[in-house]
Structure formats: structure tokens, C-alpha cells
Image 1 (cartoon, rainbow, N blue to C red):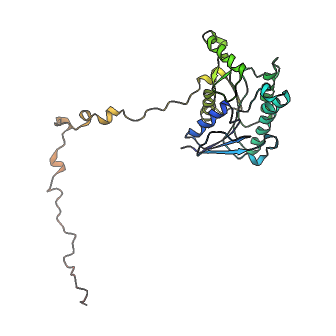
Image 2: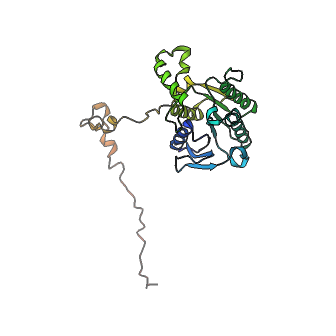
Image 3: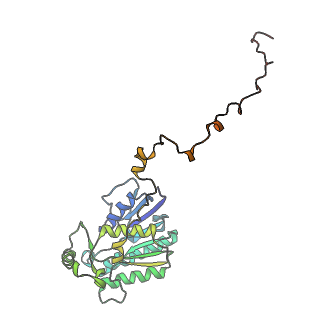
Length: 281
């Protein structure tokens, strides 16, 4: 059992929901804290939920943890305006990262987007790129940037654009080879697993970017079987002692059982010892 603690923000989304469940089931973690605006449906003995308003989040709301996982994100349609969208996808993650730095949290893992670029022609990608740049400038001890392609999974809210995109990429998958392979859709549960693998097993570097095609291949290391196989344990014919001993392996019984050699010649008992009754003086 490990002794790690994790904080997750954005725990009620597609990837965040899977991430929290996987963290709670991982033996390396004894504590998982979710900071959210609403209580997640998932419950676990390791899980602590803090209901907070991200607009008024303070340093005391974030305790020390080994990893801060940030899965915050929305869409312009759901946000209702670009202003609200930037607040959720840029301002909140940056503010939380700043508080985490003050708390001494050594590693932040944040989900952005495959095409994140501050100079992108697409507004969504520009915001994600701006967030990446700001986080790098913040000077965190360790920053892992997660850039998934289109996420696949069962969302609570229906997103027409994503549903269409998933179907298109599903049929186009055989054609997405070489450089286009990075555009393949990816399961949100795999992204969540990849984040944990990165936290536990990746090489520590100040800033690392993980593209979608890399996330697909990340998995927990296989445990080496250092024990003997079941056949070796229960193969009685192989492990029983032989009925006969070859001449080279024989031991001279006279050497071992030489009674004369090891005969006791002196007594260690004092013959002069007399025992008296208690009523005798």
C-alpha cells in the first residue's frame, strides 16, 4: 500500500469521473480529494469532497498532495459566452496552479487539447495554448501537459458535435496512419489511466507534453513473476527425495553417528545436593 495523496479538480466531467475512480482503486494512493462545485456521484472510503466556488477559492482550500490533477474544461456552447469559457478553461486552472505552488505540491497534470497553440486560428485551441504558456511561466516544480484528441465515453450531457466527430473518426480510423495517427479518438478512461501512469512512473522533468498518440500506449508496468510456477510448488514427483543415494553423494554414517566419539564421560549434576522439606531447618 502506497502513501500518496492526490487532488482532482474537474472531477465531474468525462475524464475526471474516470480518473477519480481509478485513483481510489489504485493501491499507491491513500487519499483522493476532489474540489468541485457540485458533489460527484462516485463515493469511496479514500475520497474526500470539498464543495467550493472557484471564484473565491483560497489557499486553505488546497492541502498538500503529491499530485494535482486538473481536468477542468467546458465548451463555448455550454459556457454561454467566451468570457465564461475562458474563466473555466483558463482562469480557474491557472489560479488553482498558483495556489498549489504555494502549498508545495510538486506535480501538476493538466488536460488541454491536441491542437493547443496560443497562435492558433481556432479560438478553442488558442485558449488552451494560452493556458499552457501561462502554466510554464508560473514555474511549477513539475508540469505534465496532457493533449488528448477527441474524447470517447458516455457523457452525462449530450454534445452533438462530439457525437458526429466520434462517428466520423471511427470510420476514418483505418486511414489515420503515420502523422495522422495522432488524430484518432481516444477513450477518456485511457486518458485517465495514462495520467496516473505518468504521475507514478514517468521520468521527472520540469515540463513534459504528452500527445494523444503517446497517451494511447501508456499502461502500468507488468509485474515480474519472481515466484516459482504452480507446477514447481506441486510437482511432488519432481521434488520428493530419491529412494536411493548415489555413491558420490553418500555421507559416512559412522562420522555422523559415532557414539563412542561423542560419549559423555562426566556428569554435570552435583551429587552432593540434598533436598530438605520446608518445615526442616
